[in-house]
Amino acid sequence: MNAKTHPGIRACFRLDYPGFSLDVDLDLPGRGVTALFGHSGSGKTTLLRAIAGLERVAGGRFTVNGETWQDEAEFRPTHRRSLGYVFQEASLFPHLSVQANLQYGQKRVPQAQRRVSLDQAVALLDIGHLLDRKPARLSGGERQRVGIARALATSPRLLLMDEPLAALDHALKQEILPYLERLHDELDIPVLYVSHAPDEVARLADHIVVMAGGRAVATGPLGDTLARLDLPIRLGEDAGVVLDAVVAARDEQWHLAHMEFAGGRLWVRDHGLPLGHRARVRILARDISLARTPHNGTSILNTLPAIVVESVDDAHPALTLVKLRVGESPLLARLTRRSAHALEIAPGQLLYVQIKAVALVG
Amino acid sequence: MLSDTDWSAIRLTLELASVTTALLLVIGTPIAWWLARTRSAWKGAVGAVVALPIVLPPTVIGFYLLVTMGPNGPVGQLTQSLGLGVLPFTFAGLVVASVFYSLPFVVQPIQNAFEAIGERPLEAAATLRASPIDSFFSVVLPLARPGYLTASVLGFAHTVGEFGVVLMIGGNIPDKTRVVSVQIYDHVEAMDYASAHWLSAGMVAFSFVVLLLLYTLNPSGRRA
Image (cartoon, rainbow over all chains, first blue to last red; front, side, top):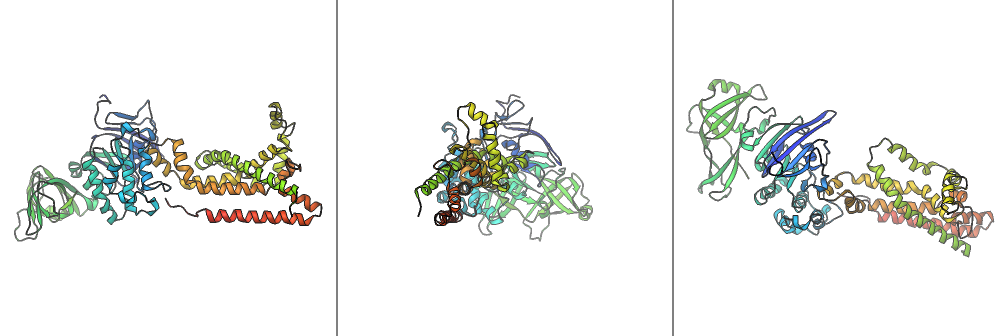
């Protein structure tokens, strides 16, 4: 395929260090957020650094939406790749004010290539009141927001984010996530997002690459990939699915919203989203129980008919993970093997899923 | 009080220290950069050579410089063929000797500053389109400023305080190579303790003020 007309991201890197190797050949969508997900040591940060040219991988190939950054013939050094890079710690220049940090990258980009204005980046991350400060006088969350704005101000063709929230505590994480969602919604810049946190991935990613041992063990759209049972990487307590849904109705009396997804409707707590608003819901495998009949007289609001697709042993010998299908949407349920045995679970079986908790993410 | 020859020695000393420090900042920067960043097996050896003047008696440095820069030494041959004459017993010769003598006092603070900066700011600069040279001037130099201040002060003060090397390579020529430390030696030889006191006390005061400035002006910590 001609690289010039090939939309999307092609990454092919092979690297051998003592005790660590990276071997990936990826074909990723050229828009939206792609999460590089895996445990520490799985090679996801090394891959991101290779893509940025910070790690020089001989023989590597990388193309983003028709622009080649390296191949057999050419290696563009990092400063000649139109990328934005957000480090785990913001890595702002301590000798420069916030404003000068933001301008540092922008003024090095030719005028004709500037698509994101400084004002736009400042507004998007809501840092207008911080411009005169030195980085030392910013909170961790503010610093990271400035770091993201600084990367955006270079109008990158690809935004690389290396666990931008990992160094922040839970509260600060919640402070930043909405800004990342806004990026996703308002700018048409493809993002590669390295993370080991399933909740971030569930909230932000459209596409996921699961990394383990320096290899991409699974890649695909987020919903389908999370529901796969054959992944060698176990999400443990975080196994579950993410579904795209729309606010179909609101129950003012009980403060609930009815979310419609491909396969049914779910009641969730009403967060004030307007009717027709698109949002993601996340359902963890541990929050689902299965029954042969639809129960009455239960506190559980969401009960849906589902077909068993398959089941596999979970990490602990007492547990099993069951994949089901509700309409077109996959669900994962975790139950004890004893319960699975009692229900005589088999592919094709009709069961009722009782969903104890549904989280609205993003 | 101070005689004309004393003043002349002071002027010469300050001139020598200024020229030497300026040269050392230029020469020391690439050496410090290389030492701070290299993974070469030569790092230890080069670092040791740079540090030699700290432990060697100044007379040893002076002796070898005298031999190499003298009429029959390799550097002497070169300077003569270039029509520059020989360097020993000239101001230029003193400058060359001082550069060697004070090298570690300039290189090491700068090297420490470079090492403290680490890789990350350079990587951040590269992701913001700055070429390596660009990021050296826009990021590394400003961040290494405290190291440069220390290096300048130590290089200057150490050059002012040199004696053995000067005696070996410069001799004791008024207005050309007779610096303060040599002048004090002359006064003591001549049993003129009063004049020796004036100059010596001046040196003590000068050194104290310089170090005081260094310790008060230089911020002890930086935050990233």
